Length: 153
Image (tube, rainbow, N blue to C red):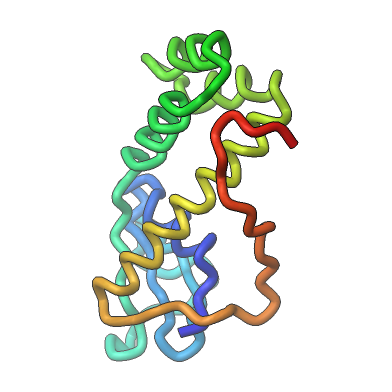
């Protein structure tokens, strides 16, 4: 199925209060369901249940775990300590991003690390539903350099 893993991972990691989303099994297109009406945000209703695969939002727990795992493998202990203090309490995601922005090389590594993890969770979700992704038309792939902790660019 030609599905955009970035879109699918956004649905999977979205706020459960929004109601999740759907993957169109004919096109691979992902759509967000509005919590109040149950309609896809682009206006279509998933009437043909054989065509649509529901995506339930799991929330941000996995993204939070990605931050913890990234901190654990950082070679720069002072940055790791600073990031460790940001992920406790309210605003953890914003504080983490703000502190990480002070180190562009590590920030870039985190985005690659996080993208690989998000896309992996999306692939796993598809496999759990007996599908596998194929390249999505017009999908621009991030550079596929493997994450190496502590390596400078």
